[in-house]
Image 1 (cartoon, one colour):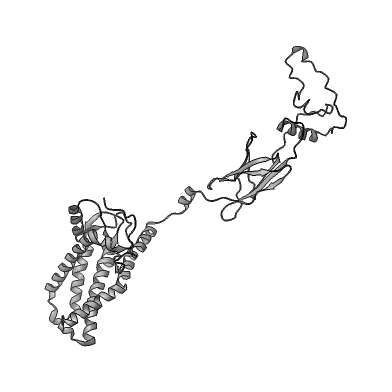
Image 2 (cartoon, rainbow, N blue to C red; image 1 turned 90 degrees about the vertical axis):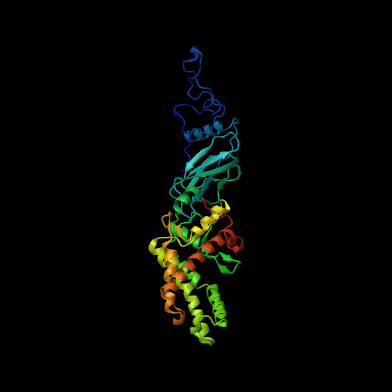
Length: 383
């Protein structure tokens, strides 16, 4: 990786020549424009008999004379270093350039197999080093100073991956993106207490996988608030002797609690996990946030009957409607026989659940966002 030294023309047959007389003024002794001077002339007699006659020394003198207008030589130095990647491996083939802050031309080398480079025969001065390599960000040093005859060894140069290369290497799947979105939605709570997991403030959110739908449903079912609300409802029903077939006392209370919690759990699992997986539908409410009050109201009410499919298209909300009636039918299995009304009770509860879902969406669109915590700072509204 050493710079090649300039090679002088063959002059072995010539007597010792003072560089600034022969090599600079007329190295080949044939450049005179006067026709009468085209015949060879005898070379001038050297002024000092002790000048070295070795070709190598003549070459060195040529470099010194070419680099400076002065006949005085400046002790030359070198600049070396090593280029590594972020993992510490040597970078072979990186282009290393040195640029002096005077009029000297830029010099460039490629690193060897060990990632090393070495510029030789460098005269003193202030310089900068730049390194360019495919797949890495360009590296440029600050201004550095090379003293006379100094062997300047740079600290190890560590290149960083370019941003373009990072974007190519780091690929997120749709499942990864949906996982990140679900993690954010699990932080959404009304008044900082009540779960609000089934609302997406990103209109173009990635569809959930079947596993993610079950995870979100179970996360809701096991939330402390999901136990606290049935506990309050059971206490209220017991105080009013609602569903008298359950009786009173501790046993009656826990029967009411179980029935109330069971209604929510079954409706949640059926309507938000099982059926959405079967029909490939998204169980979340997509916040619109734009348009007139009328258009937003109609949209919110319609979500009880239409929803986004996993293919991104709107379609009938089979999951929500069938889930409401299925959970209402299953509830006949654990409510007191005196309070069962067969198909009539099932239809009534199914319609109530569907209507409450529409009302809940209306509240989501206009109220809940203002009262919730964990909402994205920059939501992506509907179109």
